[in-house]
Image (cartoon, rainbow, N blue to C red; front, side):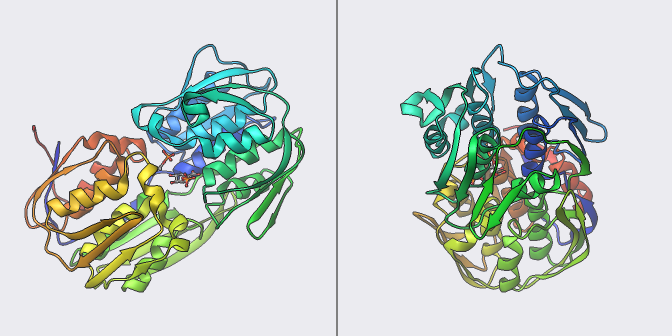
Length: 435
Ligand SMILES: O=C(O)C1=C[C@@H](OP(=O)(O)O)[C@@H](O)[C@H](O)C1
Ligand SMILES: C=C(OP(=O)(O)O)C(=O)O
């Protein structure tokens, strides 16, 4: 258990870890290239380690320098049948992208599983379109839950209109499509993160984008490449909110990915009155990268509409914290997807923030939060969910008493250095406490 105490200032400059979504994709696509992919600033989180371990179990060569977070990924003779079950552990992205990749490797047999949380999460959304392409996948609840067994075969492309706005499902189909017969198109109900499309273009793979439709073609050889992965906007989000809601803050977050399919939080916070600037924008591996400068801000409530949700899906827990510090009502709608993440994030945040005195009502697909509330100290549960643990740590920075977070180690899923960075930014010591 860790104890967070209040602070009035978040000052200085910070680099956040490499983007988790981009790191997963660099690994999966790297395994399909002729000469391999070499990236720096690969995500140090456990989720991306799960992706690398699954690829290694299929004969992929992975060279990693953990001190510098550089990773080289190469499978010169192609991916081989794994000798054991592939464990995606807590990572939805690993499991779903892996299912897409495995489905199209003829004759290969593999079983994909995960931890208790991942075994509860829906897989039918990726299994159904893959089966429509000809994949052979079976498992618990007729293919809805892990463990799932895959017998790879030559797939056919086709046109896939998705029921849920999910970049993981889109990517799984596109990965399967690279080895399929004919063109493979995905039509999304609303735009989701487009890192796969950007990386495919960067690697020279033909890809056609037309509004909500994206198409790939059978590709026999992808050369490879080398680049720096920008910082993770979803990690930066905790510091953006922390700086905004504390009284005397001024923070610069450097080299962050500012891909507009990811930065919906900035648009919402701007409406709420955030004082911020985007500076020094450049491109890295085809992705936009910039400094995000944030100062203390007087926030007011807003409504987050369902169309905005995919661009800030992982930032909603920390946005709920910001809403407790904003004047008036904030309503977040159309975010039912949060119920099927690592935890039921709608419920987890409502329970935790209520325990600190927030006025928060859990709805079927979001929250209604009334601010501004002075939060009290108290206990928060991570529910084993990294984003919940980090969001509650940010709440602790503005609470009147200490906030103790149970099972905080789960932050290492995406941001192993989170509490060290918190200590640096607030210049206060965090206390490890026994329960
Ligand atoms: O494609 C990705 O890298 C991700 C997509 C999102 O999930 P969905 O595809 O389930 O929306 C997001 O919540 C997850 O953290 C990472
Ligand atoms: C939902 C998340 O990841 P995944 O779906 O890959 O487990 C997340 O990182 O917030």
